[in-house]
Image (cartoon, rainbow, N blue to C red; front, top):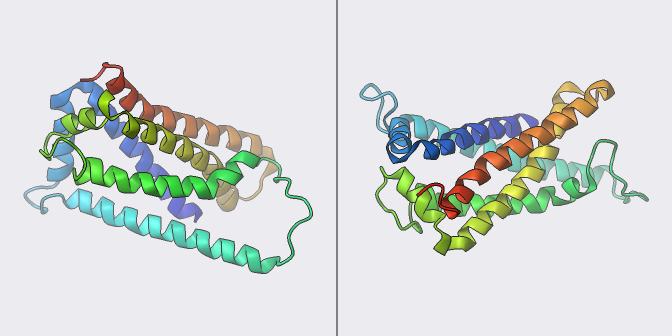
Length: 212
């Protein structure tokens, strides 16, 4: 679960950086999207890089969800009698732990919408695939404010998930080193804030007319 989570975090950071090309303008954003689709041509088939990323993401997500189910099953059977106290362990946030599973549901629903909106363009007003810039601007148009609100709420869920998930992953891989616990918590929180802010700035910029 930790390894698959780290792979997903790497993709999220790369995706966030790619989104920021929108501030360079239509031409640069569309050139970036075009480069992803044509990477390696003519030696490689069209969209080879994207398909490698898609398959890798599907595998990582499947491994992550399956690991969560297995770990939950093991935890239930390891201790059939509930704890007398539900106080979270040191370094854990009660709210973060409580929102991990429900936050994951929100994230999954958002990913489905995101694919329909900006990948397949099923619900996006811009059907022209090469115009990635236009699709981003259209999806966060002020008239479609419910989409923007849903996007921002999903980012909040992602932030909680990242904050607790990154900390847990480090604890799993590196071990419960109390000397580094505080620093790990700070890094996890900092990463969550950067990712949420990096993604949120795009819809907010479109909504307030900074990108059009």
